[in-house]
Image (cartoon, rainbow, N blue to C red; front, side, top):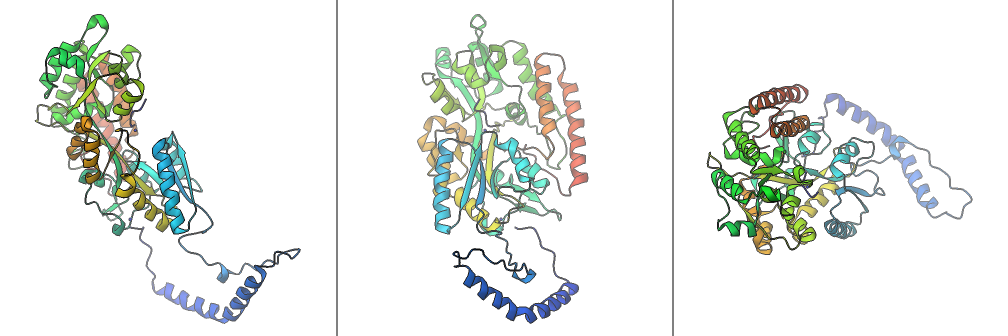
Length: 467
């Protein structure tokens, strides 16, 4: 299913007094060999055109002839590894080829439909790609492992981007100084998606609060048709708007766990109670894969989903009538959405960092991003381009408007087990085999353990309060 699940180089050691002494000795040695050096260069030039000879004499591999640079082997293509995104991929391939031709470089672009799962192995392998796409959710783990190269500040200008999106791709170094690695290329956000014909039949506007959301869910529920008013998901990202709406968070401003809180209890009580009262259901109950499919088949009235739902409806259920509205406001007066984003990052092991960062800046720029095919399923991260997107997709404006205050879908490094535990636990909450107080107590303990482990292994691992 189409759910979005989808520049400072490391400090070099300074030369000390011993280093200068060794350098002087080395120069004395090399200077004595310079006549021989130029003789070999002349011989190499003469032999370069002697392909008619029955054999090509090999030059001795003398150390002072091995000239090295940061760019490595110029004959080696600059390697890119991107997610497979159909027409977008082909457009990026064309833009990359044009850029490479202008730079007189060779670029090799590979893609995968299982991109994020393969990325860690590739970056930690012997021949990692130079430039990759990294999601905000995966970024903390890759940065902590030292698999990505921080960018030179001159190549990164966060102006024009939502601050929280740009901040999602920064990470502290050993001195706890936050370094930027890349800038967001695109963003997707959650909003309320609903059956517009069903709501019109009730003569009601879309809900703006938890109370009106429940009331409309009750009105749209039809037990005889096995239709639920509200379609929920046992998924942390879909529940988070309720946690935020109640004034809660997972990680507090001091970097500590805050999941076991009155706000979380209130948010979960609303989310689970409407389910147990039979006015809400989840996709599996109607043998569907996700909420978008449930709505399109007439088995649901409202849901919280992302703008990737628009091209899904267009291609799979073009006759389905739906509309989009902001997420209903919670008791804390908030309707914070969740933003999913990614960036072009450079491998820490790349021998072509300069070229890779230049290409990253090119592909992230407004000319390229603004020229890519767009079906409404993604939004440009740049504010100016997102305004153009709103004009192109007026019916999807609530998704774009949600970005300004949205919290980035990102957890501290090592929290994959936390996410899996949360999602499994929600299934048990739906089935009433576990209750919220025990559920949150266990998650709080698990999160604290994971944070302690991260603090012990790598300095400066404090995360923002935005998951």
